[in-house]
Image 1 (cartoon, rainbow, N blue to C red):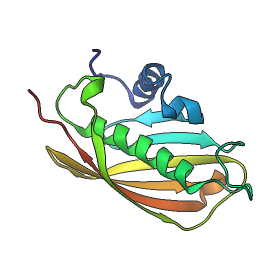
Image 2 (image 1 turned 45 degrees about the horizontal axis):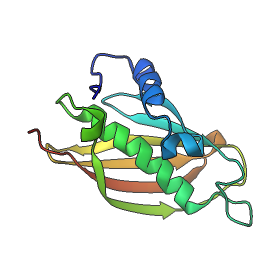
Image 3 (image 1 turned 90 degrees about the vertical axis):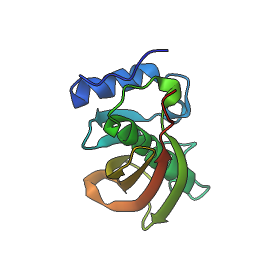
Image 4 (image 1 turned 180 degrees about the vertical axis):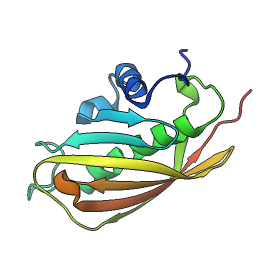
Length: 148
């Protein structure tokens, strides 16, 4: 299994991630990885049919999936050990506060690590719409599997 690279620029790491996550929910929903670094992860999701409620607003599950994706990459990038993709952090807790919604545009998740623990990483994610309108605040905890 290929190792998570630790020597790429944020943009190059985002491209690497995009190439290695084909066939996953991320690709199915249409997420685009913009940046991944030790400081933050940024993932975008264009609003389109299939991601919305019957009223046309973005489904809360679409927002939480976007936040979980960005937060997982942030947790992975902050880890100081080189891991394989099958050793990626696993979300064990996700709490979301959806404060607004939209019917069109692009959602942007920006995840920053609040606590870079050895076995539990805590991440805060802001989801915004075009123009920076806050849609949701998501806090998550990710279990880092111990090395064998």
